[in-house]
Length: 116
Image 1 (spheres, rainbow, N blue to C red):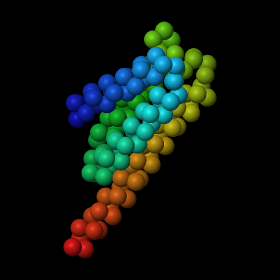
Image 2: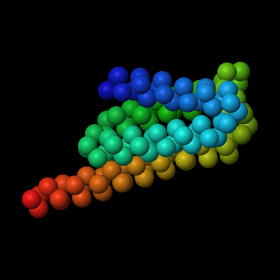
Image 3: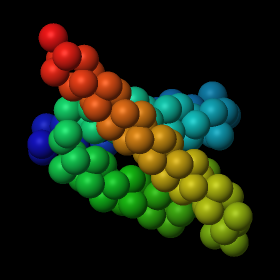
Image 4: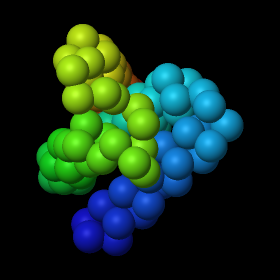
């Protein structure tokens, strides 16, 4: 699980830094939301929820770094709470949708196996 969290954190910071360099900050954050959607779908399909909880802790750490660092990352200004809420809600919604679809896919796949 630690390797998964390390790879996830490296990918998130890589996306954040790369999209800041090309001045497409919000597209980078939405790409992270798609990454969260995909990972939560895959993990909930396998009924593995511990990596999802670890991913939540990593994302709280990332959001605090994006909020408090003003020289390295210029994503969120100190007084821009609306943008912070928007980004956090996009991450939360993508994770909820990924978990829901993953569970539905797991149930459907499990029912298919029981019919055989």
